[in-house]
Length: 377
Image 1: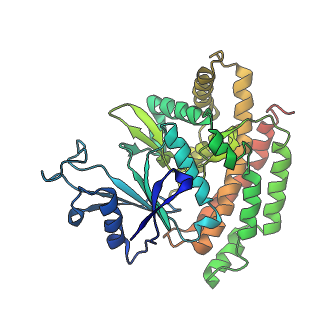
Image 2: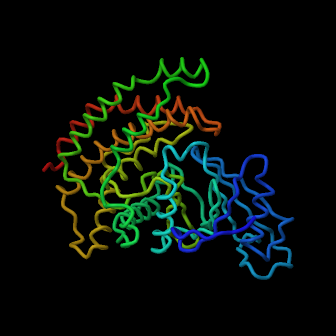
Image 3: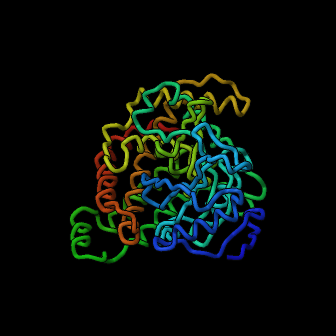
């Protein structure tokens, strides 16, 4: 398994191998034998991370047995964990994998993302971040809420390098992406059962196009900032390091320039969870305003501006967030229709799509009414 080097990631090794269900163990052993030469490959332990619905993620480590001297061992009596991310089937249709790696490179440069050890044909290996993934209930903790809001502000205030901006302009491609996703919705699903479910639960493609165009016309006239966004602020993508009392963000496959209000709205939507989707957990106005106030104060601090945030500024951002909450439902509802056709992950994507699109239509009138309070050009 010869290693080559790819310029786009500053000489990070790349291996021309594809990991499948059949060869995952032997191939990972080969990869780690190159990456962690002091590890006893025959004593690898494996942890499966099964919360994601886009990719497959495994963690590999060795327990300390007194024979390994070079890796640093954690307080858990094991080596560091090497994470192995394997792209989901056909996810290159919905994710720009080249941009994902550049996002990692850019954020690693800023000390935000972990280091990538290597790439391979259908994924990459990278460093594990100590801590635990948060869940919606954690956000009732004032300290955690504060840390998360400030971390989002830090991401949104990143000064992108010239190298990054050579590839990506500081402009949102959100609606272009949504319309491209619509074009990728299959004309017919693989089974009669899925096709029947699709026809029963999901609006027509013409209807989806109409809804997207309506929202585009509204957003086009809003004064909303475009910044570097995470674009997938699931609660589980916040990792809380209790020992150091800090929060870090993981998983940057959807990251890129976008509307700041979208990133925040998408985060609030994700309080509902995924497998046990419950939109009654969408935060109240009071809870959102508290989060937004922390976020805006931190943003002003980073930019060297007056720290105090006016009520008008808060109300404006809150109003924008409600409009983008609708956009988030459209985005992931349409995304799930593609995943339902191609993904080999055991998840009911058609059900998830119907839940997101139902929430869009359920809240559309009320959220657009609130959105009228946003500042317009």
